[in-house]
Amino acid sequence: MQKDPLHPAKRRLWALLFMLGFCLLVSLAVSIPVSHQSSSMLYKFGWDRVSLRSGKTLGILSGLLLMVQLLLASRIKVLDRVFGLDKLLKTHRGLGLTLLVTAGLHPLLVFLPESGWTVPFRLEHWPEYLGVVLLLGIWSTALLALFSKSLGLCFEKWWLAHRLGTPLLIVFMGLHALNVSESFAKGFPRSFLLSALAASALVWIWIRLRPLRIRSQAYNVDRVDPAADRTTTVGLESTPGRDLAYAPGQFGFVRFRSRGISREEHPFTLASNPADKQRLEFIIRAVGDWTSRIPKLTPGETACIDGPYGLFSYLCYPDAAEFVFIAGGVGVTPFLSMLRHMETTREKRATTLIWSNRTRSVMILGREMDRLEQTLPALRLERTFTREPGGRKLDRRLLEQLLEPCSREARCFVCGPPGMMKDMRKILVRLGFSRRHIHQERFAL
Image (cartoon, rainbow, N blue to C red; front, side, top):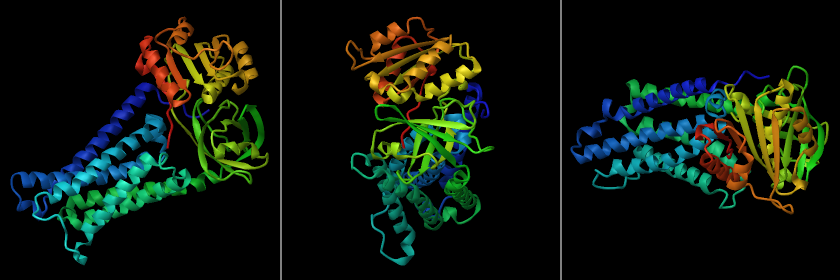
């Protein structure tokens, strides 16, 4: 078993420390235009000085946010244990929008006090023109990330460009800042910027070396079986001494080395029992071109796994007296891992699993769920079907009926399609469950 997940109180403490550290960095960065004024500031007065100083401040803040973006997307385990990778990537997208605004306002406020809005096209003005390229790069990267799906862009090509483009933008930002303003010519501002650039370089190198670290711990594919309609169970076997320690409910990024499927990296929940250290299991539903090729995997091929990640596990809440699991379709996989682990550890806390499927044909591993229902005396399993004769949608009325015996202090875990998770959260709150006790894992790149 992996290191025990951090207790919620410890996670809150570490989160507070990280946030204080981030606020300190922001304070130091935005203080530079005040504490180390450039000569251009000396000849500005009133609103012109306010505009110029504000523009420089937003420019420095934009540079810091750009480097933080790299950190948030780097899958650093300590940050995942405190915040959860899904929340880090959500913050990454939110800061991307903030960066669009701060980077766009930076040149507007800097040039507003000037009589002209153009810079002579001369070699000595290359830092300013590099800034134009940097701004266009930031806007292009952010807008493509926001609208890549609606534009029909190939995910793999866009993702590769995004991963390679961000470090290049950081390099451009460093060159622009070091050469466009006297504030970074010496002293604390220069040391601060160079230190931040060096830290970003180390993070980028660590990211680039990740495939080499993972490749040395490959797993063997030993089972490829149908689990339900358009759903496949992939079993992996580890070599002695190379087992993956994880908590039930966590996920990992998987890359298969196979003749029948490309080597793209995709996130999947670990559906296996963490107590079985030599075996891993993924249950994958065909929802696209890549996942539809999963049945072409053959035993003897290998898989590389980067993980585990996530805080979607009942072990993260050792003080909870009761659990409520709500699953939609293949979203039951993290709960399958949890129930398998509960069986091994002889968990006695009351647990209710409400599992909604369209039809019985898409219900995965139904026999094992029947067995777990028998071997776990504290488990109550409720199955619902939306497209079977007499079936019902999991709405407020049905959920209220199914959860009537449950304590409103229970920890609730919800996993399924995005729309279903959004609806379930609203309904649970209306039924009296605490927002702080409702856990979801919305993972999206």
